[in-house]
Amino acid sequence: MPHANGGCGVAPVREADGCRILHRLEIREGPTGEGDTDAPFVAAIVDVETTGIDHEQDAIIQLGLRRFRFDRSGVVTKIDRPYSWLEDPGRPIPPEITRLTGITDAMVAGHEIDAGAVERMLTNSAIVIAHNSAFDRKWIERRMPAAAGLAWACSMADVDWQARGFDGCKLGFLVMQCGWWFEAHRADADVDAVIALLRHRFDDGRTALQELLETAAEPSWIVRARGAAFEQKNRLRARGYRWDADRKVWWKHVRDGERVAEEFWLAGHVYSAEARPRVLGPDFERVDCWRRYA
Image (tube, rainbow, N blue to C red; front, side, top):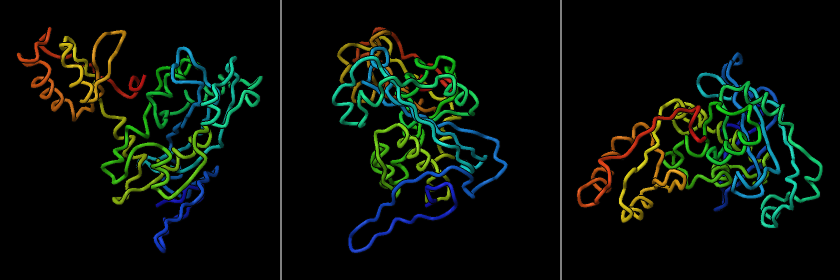
């Protein structure tokens, strides 16, 4: 297991007398001592804390960002300094958000995100990564429109943590299973936790970043169960489909290798004669890293 710090080292998970020792997570600026020192690629890790989950009605109260350089093997070779901005949402922060993040009205009063700096750093990166990009991307692009349309990847969805022997996919839990602990639910701390996860090496020697980059490069599909009978809603929901109120259709995101299996499932359960569909089959829309999570 690689050390979480910028310098090269090893931070083994120690177990003794039925106890497991976790190390405090620290990400240091500078060369990591690993990989190709002439690595040409730059990634930006972002995280936002917000007043709620509605990106049309709520507002960002903290944005964390940190960039790193990586090589073709998915090895982090150099880590940049951390950036963190608080922002006054112009309304009281809900008490439950303050309890979760520790961010108060007094802390954000009069503060504003340097949108120009954020846009420059994101647009000068090869890829933008968050631990829940389906959430963070919408907030980033709404607040910083000049950063729209970039390539994105997700450290939660683009790494098959379960297949690698991990339980769950929440950031704090994954970090703990890698042997570290940190102050969760603050944007700057969450950004560093993502960097630590991406540096993690699996038993086969590959880094989580390498798997993420390979997954991000593959096409995927938005499946829309157009014309599905109302009676199939529970079946679709159980399959992982979500309701798009604007389009009035059930939809799901599937990887390229999952498309054929999804077509067969839909044909047998949603578009069979017994299911009484209104059309002959679903719609498939191809997406790539520039449109995924948008």
